[in-house]
Image 1 (cartoon, rainbow over the protein chains, first blue to last red):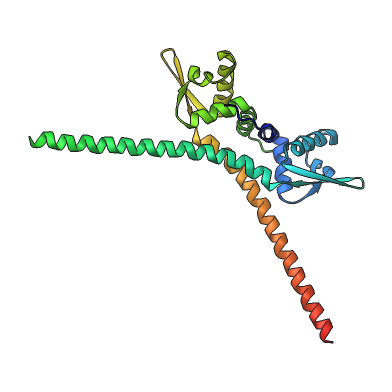
Image 2 (image 1 turned 90 degrees about the vertical axis):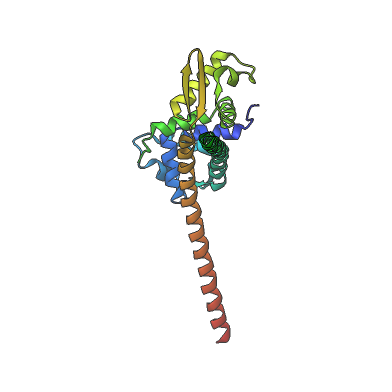
Length: 121
Length: 121
């Protein structure tokens, strides 16, 4: 019954923080170093490093250290997986609502026909 | 710079737990009471009530109490908002990759033309 996906746990947990979403937003514009990512925030570099680690553990970003600089890059696949998880649920629910709507319309049409027949008698 | 959306914080936090995702999965099949939601889990009713409260606070589900029964129902809109947040980021990143690919192809074509000209001389 349980959705056994620790990866999804980590992805959604990573997305639940506004600073991490802002970091991800910045990275969709192109790769950046940790210092570049930290620049717009009134917080310590250490705090940003922690956010980057959470994002990396979730798979939403990848990082590579060349010399003294760690460069971060978005992973479209991980974003896509979380997106697909959501869209599948929304589609199941919307299909269910559509079927209910059809059923109600069918009931109304049957009711009208009955009404007409009763009127003719 | 920060994405000031406490609603998104709550939605992604709600989705970061496998039991809550399983509850949401069940609700995409149709509305259910809290006791019905709790049935498949080896946990206390109180724990499920807490998960339901987190899901309701996020807007992913709505609940209604009639008599002694609280019935829960999925909100396609809230799922759709989280989905759109993700898809917008993925699309920006993919468009960037496409532009980079075009640029590299352009460079390669220019390089080939140069090579041919140099060969003719």
